[in-house]
Image (spheres, rainbow, N blue to C red):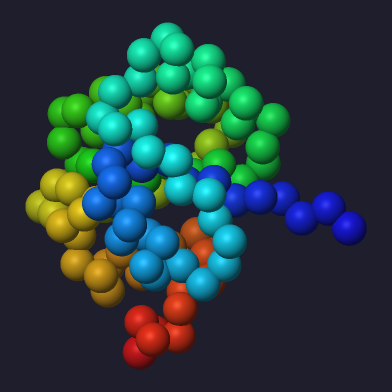
Length: 115
């Protein structure tokens, strides 16, 4: 039986660490480190075009919006997850809101974090 791998693309290491802390299932979290050069697109993003379960969760700021636009072009089938503009960054989004976003996207969350 084939099980699709889940991939979440984030901007920074703290975003990645935060998600991995919450997730109770194997998910590959890919960091762009805030930029997407042609080389990164070729090495990291193009191989994901065939994956069914790719999610994009970037900051709610100008840099994040620019990255989201770029990723939309490269990965038109990716699902977009959003933090609120008032939280600005994924890393500073309150855990309960982040959990809500992940649960709505059908991710399993560690029981320690579920109320």
